[in-house]
Amino acid sequence: MRHALGIALLVLSLSMLGGCLEGLFFHPDSRHWGTPREAGLRAEDVTIAGPDAKRLHGWLLPAASPARGTVLHVHGNAANIGNHLPLVAWLPAAGWNVLLFDYRGFGKSEGKPSLDGVVADTRAALEWLRKRPGIDPARIVVVGQSLGGATALRVVADDRAQQPVRGLVVDSSFASYRGIAREAAGALKLVVAPLIAGLPGDASDPVTAARRITVPLLVMHGSADRMIDIADSKAIHDAAPGPRKQWFAVPGAGHLDAFMREDVRGTLIGWLNAL
Image (cartoon, rainbow, N blue to C red):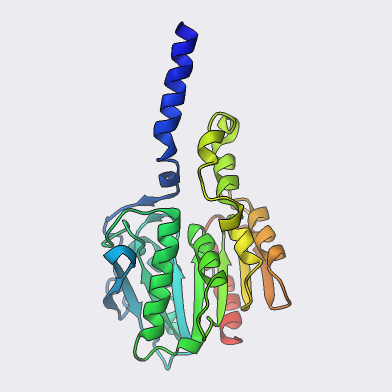
């Protein structure tokens, strides 16, 4: 009787957690982490019409010189754009406009995040950029980091615009939603297996999307990343077809450290300017 009750409680707990597991991918907040003005940058506060009538907040940073192109920055799973600003704040000085935006439920953006929802939000941000006066739609590069890399892969892989994006950069990302959940679960992966099965499957995985990428692709990952194994990014690179892809392992870099290093910035600018 007691054993049966224990099993029943476990099943109930798992069913309740089932709807929450996807939420574990997101750690948003509305905390003030800093603004472009505080960083000495020019910027425009913008509102993007997202799916389901949700309003998404962003910053458009103009290039300090005649723009070589525009970077759409798709950030990681935590905080908001204020926290991620330092990762791309150097790009305007290098001649690139930057659009940072918050997914639904992050910062000042409306709604509640979901894995498919942030893909839809990123698609909306890309379309907003394409229609923005003064932005050359033929010179847009998508840069996704961590969860943003997984999201960017899905958006670019399924983009059917007449004018495709100029290129895609994926930094410190994971290959599979269920795979990264199993890694995070560790010894409990068998217990939470029914919940993991509720996450997006192979068809939606970043590594699957990589097989459909037709634009120039740069995949990078820090060799000392303790959050996501570098093997995930290598699998993404290897899955992508064609000769227009490049693999860049960043020696000694931890998770999302690469963009803070001058040598990496130089490599990235060289890749962007060559597109």
